[in-house]
Image (cartoon, rainbow, N blue to C red):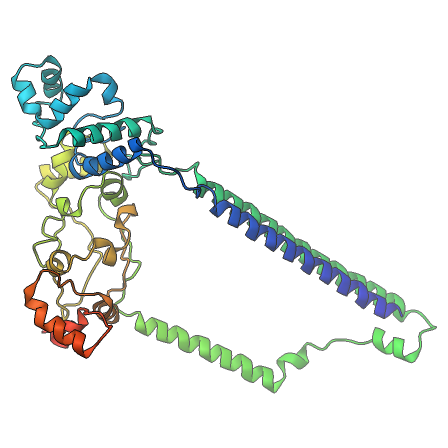
Length: 435
């Protein structure tokens, strides 16, 4: 019958669309998988690579606060410095630059005068360590130059050493994902258009069939059949289900809001100066303790004063609009009003040095990947439950500390196989934080 043919055609189109969506979804997953595997082929490390890797560690621990490969910091940029000076000269300069200046070496004196007679520290490196540092500089010099940083935000482009930038694998993955999003949106639009078209065709055929005189009773009943939507929303069962769903959603929202009172996770205020941790702690790998001088020895991690900024910025990036704000603050004898991000209630006691110095907790444990943040935000919830879970899960470092010997022995006898955590030492007792 004609009405059955309409239903068959409609079912066929829906099946076809479902098949196409399935195929394209599989294609999307395949594309994403192939993109995620790019660049994962393991490489081989030669002897030179191992030496350069050791030199990189030495460089970052001793030199990175004053030098960069492709940019002048406190001292000169070091790209291709091995081509400008001979190897013995470089080793002597790194080992004791003051001695070379005093000896009257022309290159050393010229370099000393060029940088306003700033004294470079001496380093008691062995000959092998000096070779490793220079080998790292050679390798880093051969890598593509970093994109220039935005002076307004302190942002950086490609990090030294070949880190992926805007044109790397991450960008390719993003482009592929964006393309697949467009395909799926187009398919959804096509599906909607086809459904509307089928409904229009069904209505036209229905009107046509109603005008025919030779239909039997069953066909006529099918043609004149109307779907009553009012029966759905007037149904008692449907009303109860919708009411329950609405009540659950409202209750869940209220509970979420209640639990969120006083929690500022994700808080990311705009600071008076656009300071980038990604540039300073990430690209240049400046130790947190250099700016936050009390983080290892005090209850509080202090906010750096402007004179710490001037240790470097009295020489570099002086023309930056953001650096000029620091100069104005110093000239006007007015403190920089940084916006505090991490706030604990007065009823809770927290000691930074106890965690960083004694407990050897890394900054990233509480503050997240701070070295990747252009603008700092609150990474952790800083709730009591979050602190307690950390105390329950973090093993206590008792190695070489005889104070804990008997306590660890008693704990192991009573709790075989369980780690000796902060909680095991009374770290979840109320008065530890509330007194």
